[in-house]
Amino acid sequence: MASSPRIKVEFFYDVVSPYTWLAFEVLCRYQSHWKMDLVLRPFYLGGLMNATGNRPPMMVPKKGLYMHKDLLRNAAYFGVPLKAIEDPFNVMIEKGTLRAQRFLTVVAHEHPEHLEGVSRELWRRIWSLGEDIVEDESLHLAAKATNMEDADIQKCLNMMNDSTIKLSLKKTTEDAVEYGAFGAPTIVLHLNGRSEMFFGSDRFPLMAEMMNEKWKGPFPDMIKSSL
Image 1 (tube, rainbow, N blue to C red):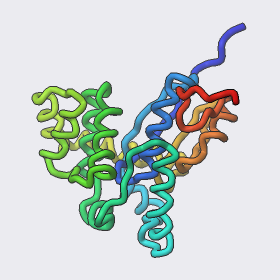
Image 2 (image 1 turned 90 degrees about the horizontal axis):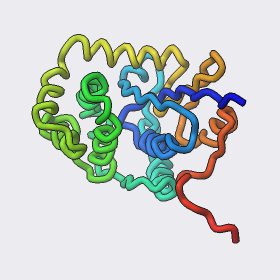
Image 3 (image 1 turned 90 degrees about the vertical axis):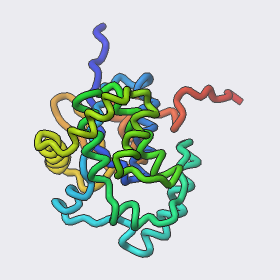
C-alpha cells in the first residue's frame, strides 16, 4: 500500500506576536512526527491588520489584562521561555517589527537553513530577554546566535531595503490575506487540493484530525508513563 503523501503546511508569522511563538515551537517539534513539509513564511502583521480592519488585542483594555495572565499560563504549558515585558505598547506598536520581518524575509531568500533559528532568536530577544530587535546590531546578534557568518549577516542587513525584499514581504502578507488571515499565527494546510486555514496556537488537535495524525500534546518526544 502506498504511503500517504506529505502535507504542505504554511506558517505565516510575525515575531511581534507571542502566541505565534508558541505555535512556531510546537510545529517545529512535530516536523519529525507528522508527515508534513513546514514552510515558514514571515509576513508583516501590521500590514495584515490594516488590510483586514483588525486591531491588536492589547488595544482593548480587558483583552490586554487577560493576555498578560494567559500568556504566562500558555508559556508554561507549551514549554516556551516567554515572559511578560515591561512596555509592550512600545515594543509592539511604537517600535514594531517591520525591520525584523524584512530581515527574516532576506534570510528566507538567501539563507533559508537559518530561518527557523533566526526567527526563534528574535522571539527570544523580545519575549524572553526584553531586548531590541529593530536595530542592525540587534539583528546581527540574533543571526550570529544561529552561527551565521558575519559576512552573510552583513549582506542580509544591506539587502533589507531592496525593493525586491519589500515586495516579497508585501506579497507574503497579501497571500495570507487571500487565505482569509486576520491575525497571527495563521496556519494553512494543503489537503487533497484544497487549503484549510487555522488561526491561533490552540488548533493542533483539530489539525491533527484533519491530517490523519496524532496530537501528543506540546511535547511529542516525551514518553508518557502508562500508569
